[in-house]
Amino acid sequence: MYKKSYNKNSIINTVEKDFKKIAIPIIDIGDSIKMSIMIQEGNKQRIQTVEGVIISKHKSQLSTTITVRKTLQNIGVERVYLIHSPLVKSIKVMRKAKVRRAKLYYLRSRSGKATRLKTKFN
Image 1 (cartoon, rainbow, N blue to C red):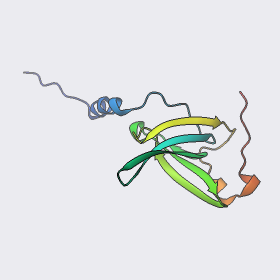
Image 2 (tube, helix red, strand yellow; image 1 turned 90 degrees about the horizontal axis):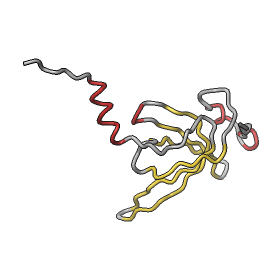
Image 3 (spheres, one colour; image 1 turned 60 degrees about the vertical axis):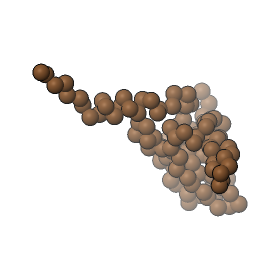
Image 4 (cartoon, helix red, strand yellow; image 1 turned 180 degrees about the horizontal axis):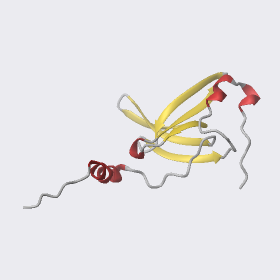
């Protein structure tokens, strides 16, 4: 009999399709976002909101990640989040910014008003 051969990438894509989130807003570099994330503390779960600016984005199908930067008490805090993770409950774009780079790592060396980005108007 003729044995049907499958392409490895097509098998991976069919498996990932079940876990991929559909209702994600279009997010770009420089956007200020507000995310709701499920946090587990002991045996309790709660939802925590995180606000910040997206300084980088790594596109890789199901394992797409964004790096969110915020400043707390004059200390810069960055964290990488998986967009399609079941722990990420919602993502809301608060403000879009006009940027000319793919990665905004230069914001790390700035503080105060120098970290502001120009707002994008449609």
